[in-house]
Image (spheres, rainbow, N blue to C red):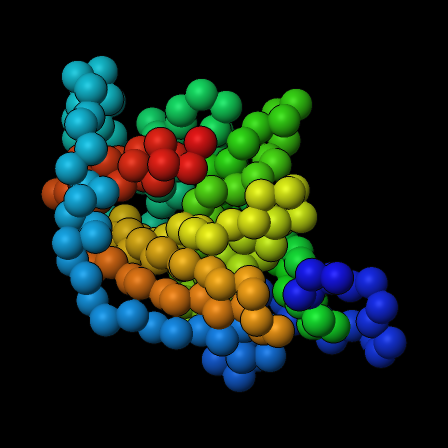
Length: 227
């Protein structure tokens, strides 16, 4: 029986919604190990060649965004104007950009579940199947919560979903956005232990108004490596 297999659970499953996750809750599921900054990892992903049609699309997106105050707009508006258009540009083959993707997985009696704002995932009949990158838009105002723990929980669910599909995910990517600023996260997983180990590497912040090309290149590199 693989780690996290709900079969044989003798007690009621403890459930954590993504928006209630914190460090102690995640520790019940996985051993999260933070890696020191490695700018060269993200620099390499950002070197992916961008085609001229993609550059033209980026110029249009950035031109419409440049004088728009993303920090004052609501999350839905920022998602529509800034975040989702770049996800669509990163589509390759059967990997499609989706919004509002539900995820859930069980890890030895602990269930994580929730909905991510977006994902780049294999499309099966216009529905998301195996996700390669999950996206969380940080909420602002009085309802704001730490996006990092939520994102790590979603990444664990995405990796588990890959495993249940017969392809154990040893690597999974995510990102969280605050207004039009993107921060990427790579998770490298070891499923051989009782609790999975996920080594977590975060990128620096990428501002879309000035670094849209680097953001798209990173997204494209993730899709190309996984698809």
